[in-house]
Amino acid sequence: MKTSLLIILASSFLTFPVFADIVDQDLPEQDDPSQLKSITQLNGLKNIPAKQTDQAPYVHDLKNAYQVRTLFVESSALPIVDLQLTFNAGSARDESIGKGLFGIANMAANLMTEGTENYSAAQIANTFEQLGAQFSVKAYRDMFVVRLRVMSDPQKIQPAINLMLEVLNHATFTPSSLNLVYSNTQVGQRQLQENPNRLIDIKLYRTLYGTHPYAQPITGTNASIRKITPALLKQFREQLLVAQNMNIAMTGQLTTQQASDLSIKIIQSLPQGRAALPLNQPYSERGFNIQHIQYQSTQAYVTMGHLGISRNDPDQPALELANQMLGGSGFNSLLMKELRVKRGYTYGAYSAFSFTQTNGIFSLNYSTKQDQLMESIQVAHKTLVDFVKQPIDRKQLEETRSGMLRAFPMSFSSNANINAQLGSIGFYGLPADYLSIYPEQLRKLTAQDVQQAIRKHIHPDNLTVIVASEKLDKEKLLQDLKDNLSPIKPVQIDPEAIHPPAPSQDNVAPLNFHTDTHASI
Image 1 (cartoon, helix red, strand yellow):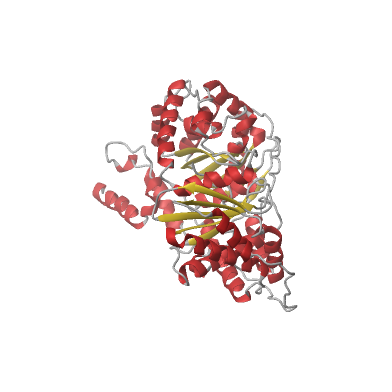
Image 2: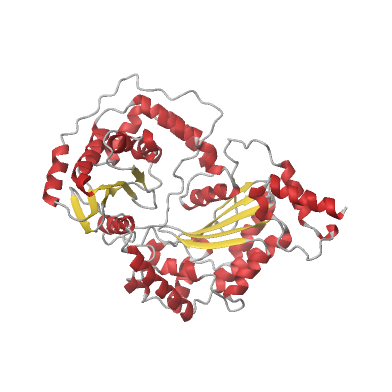
């Protein structure tokens, strides 16, 4: 009997290796079958459907007296709960604590698990491990994100949440921990000088945003992090890591009542505080701004871009579709065809929009050989100019739209993915059924809609161009860019412009829903 049960348990791992991490970490030393509590949990794997649905999950917008937004998706396939607390406390809020304190949000995130008054760093890590829980804290440009994944068993989830709240409320931020971060930052700064893409990224943000809170790197600088003290970190927590500056996302094997009870417990356990004030709009300069970073390499690295739109701009879906056509869809994109397929200037050329609380960034980037630098920039810029002023290619538009629709299931292929989506929906104030609304928005877009969004928000005559290379003739490059420009006339679109495909049962979520990514330094 004992042997057969062990064989069954082993076969469970072989059949479902991806779920091996859900096994109870508290197994007794002896292999008495009556003590193997995880068998009942593993039996739940038998109920996983063979084919995952492509329908958007139903999102509960749970109400509470504290008016803290809480979104919940019930998922009974696995005995797991994913929890995310998203605070409006990213690096954009660094200077709300004190002038020049760039990196304080990132510092708080890094030091959060380094110990409290009751637990050492080792005890925190060991306790989460014994509960089979995964816990992380991360600062981004907009968001300060706390994530917890744990089994739905009350004997696991309740102590895991208690420990999460202990860490959030009572992290001590000791001077010794700060000194360790200082040392690591100095090492990171030396490594930074060997990474041209990160150097360009930092230069781009500083050039485009100037004095705006988005301008500085999330990790701060050597000078700024030296100003950070334990007292300032505690002030950051008391001011920004509060219930009224947070939204909650939960996905997993809970009832709506259980999810509501857990959310209220979390809200009540945090200081109430107040929501952060809206960010100011950044100032956008006109014309070309060419910046050169001296970099010794056989390759030259190029980025060009300008300020874009916020996450809540109504043109966001149209620009996502446009970006996929320009440089977001691999070999089918225009930049890849012009720079790699036709001319062999680069291995890959890409474009992207960042959608944030206030104006994000539109950019395109690639690397090339030093002796092909000037020609490649001219081709990349001319491709952008033509994309703006020439009529939309209807065939490419349809192919791109279809590809985005087909990619929909990846947006919630796991509980963790679903919960990340919920966190963004809550943070940016989107409707709870956004994942169901988005596909219809995408399907209804006409060529004229996309063309108008392109002409309104993409400006090839107002670009910051940053080049990391051995040398750069700025005057010649400026003239090349000006030569590419010609008066942009209104685009004439056929009255019988493409009609969206007939509605189907397929729903879709945005490919770039994670709008707030960790900037580099």
